[in-house]
Picture 1: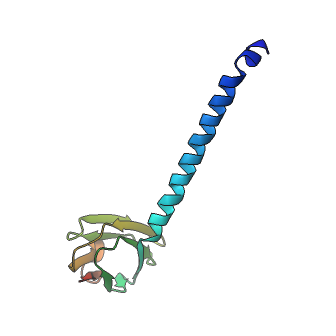
Picture 2 (picture 1 turned 120 degrees about the horizontal axis):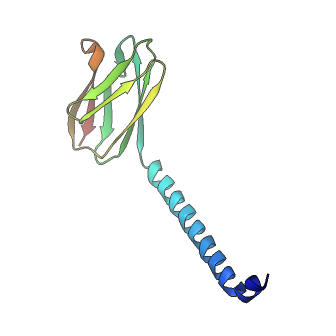
Picture 3 (picture 1 turned 30 degrees about the vertical axis):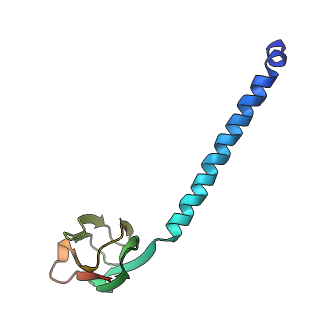
Length: 126
């Protein structure tokens, strides 16, 4: 008890610093959420081994979150050589793929396990 009385100011100072750090961290998380609001969410469904929709148009200079949901009973691999992405999508599950802002153009996507039917394109408008 004697030590606490002698170091009361130090204990209060450490507590205030701890509180300041907690406030700083929570404030930065809030600003991160604002950044996430600027992400364009695009939903793609895999159904009957096809992408629905299979043509997606997005504006240039926009960060994109692709949400790919597999409604089929078999696994699929979302892939794009143009976007340098490949990711397994389990049956009846979804994946998220974050894309940095893209330059105007066309970017092919396909399902690696059903390349003959699971095909699509992302068009980035100028």
